[in-house]
Structures are given as C-alpha cells and as structure tokens.
Image 1: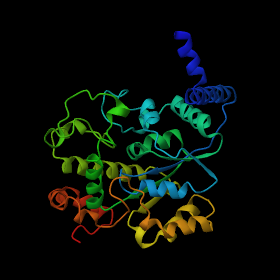
Image 2 (image 1 turned 135 degrees about the vertical axis):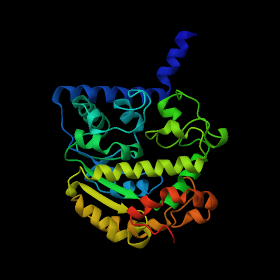
Image 3 (image 1 turned 180 degrees about the vertical axis):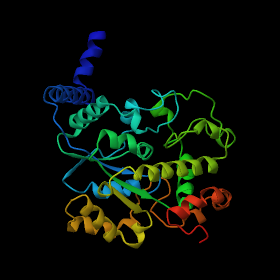
Length: 315
C-alpha cells in the first residue's frame, strides 16, 4: 500500500507541478549563490493598509520594465526581521536592524522567483520599515500613498470584520499573549502589527484601527526625511478620483517608466474599478456610510495627523 501511495504521488499532476516548482527554485537559488546576480534596487509601494496601495501597485505593475509578484510577501520580510526575531515587539524595522545578509537574502529571493530585473513590491508592513529598506537598498524608490484618516480607519474596520481574511496568526504564528480586541471579538491582530500593539489588546476596534493608521503614516513621514527627494514619491488616495491620469503620469515619469496608452486608459477607469475585496469599488467619504459614529469618536485622535497630511478634518 505504501508503494501505491508513493506511486500516486508521483503521478498526481498537482504534486508533480509542486515538485517541479520547488526544484526550479532550488536550482535558481544555487545559480544565484554562484554568480550573485544583482537585480537592482526595488521600487516599494508603501502606505497604511486600505489606503490605495493595491490600485497604485497594480497600475505601476503594468510597466513591462518592472518585475512583480502580484501579491504581498510579508512572510519573507518578517523572516528577515519581524516579531519572531525581535521578541514580538512589532513588524516595524529601523535602519539598525538591517544586515548585509538581509540584502543578499532579498536579492536571492527576487531572482529565484522573478529573474533578473527591477522589482516592484507592495507589502503593507513595509510602511513601518522604510529606514530598514533604505539601508538595504540605498537606491530604492518609495511610492507612498496616504488616505483621509476617516475613510482609511473605516476601511480597516471593514477589513478586520472580513472573516479573518487579514488576520496575522497565519503569517506570524500564535500570539504570545492574550488579545481581546473589541470585547473579545478578535483574538489576534489583523493587517499589521505596530510598535506598542500590546497597549491596544483590550481596546475597541475603532481605536485599534486609528492607532494602526496613525502609526503607519507617522513612521512614513518620519522616514521620508531620510530619503533623497528624487527617491520619494508621495500620493493622495483621493487623486484616484480627482486626477488619476495626471497622478500616474507623474509617478511613471518619476520612476523613468513609459506612460503608454494602455496605462492611460486604465487610469481613466480607476474610480470605478472594484479593487477592494471588502466593500467594492473605491469611494471618497465612504466612512459616512460605514461606522460613522465610531469614526466621529476617534476623530480627535487622528485630526492632527490628518491636518498635517493636508486633509480638512471638519468637512
């Protein structure tokens, strides 16, 4: 029977395909170990989760001059430096956490899966790791997008409520302490784990999401002061509705990528494109339809940073 089971595994097309993929990765890894092929410093799309990072990433990824995964890779970045390596402090990383071997591991990982070329990555925890990434990749470009805090917090709340889709235990493993967010409705964190997360383990969901938005954007703004201006591109989510073609033409120009007709056509449809798996197509002021009373309650906390980012918190 054991031999028959082994024969079945050898003949099963899914298992065979998985084994072939694993062999290809191993061989490409060995090749990289021998030649140390440089793949160039990446382009990182960064921003708080639910701030428009996906639509930004997917639009930039239309360029044939960039290589991209088509999905986030938090497991990889956390394996280099994350909660299991820093005593569950957070998923943030400053420049001092960067090591030469981390750059080598990233170059190898990119080459194994994408080949040689300029990589575009969008992994939302990286909004808390910009100094770390800049130390690893001094020539990397950062495309930072921010969103009105009220809409962003409301969308984060929707994501938390979305059947555990964004829960972190599947990435990080079991949490080291009790989590009872929103009266025990949530036993683990979702989206990203910010510094100081333990202080919010018993907080209402809207306070947790407000803290995630505040931390992500504060860390991004602080990091931007360390990044050369030519390597830092700042975007507003709301421009997806107000000036999408102009916004992305500027992005492509700054990244020295051709802005062709196919990209332009896509940009004209972004406001109606259902990129969100949580609550449908993008929309400004969606918070007024979703969690309005709870957003009003946390507004005093997020108001100062909203103003700093250029938003009218009284509108």
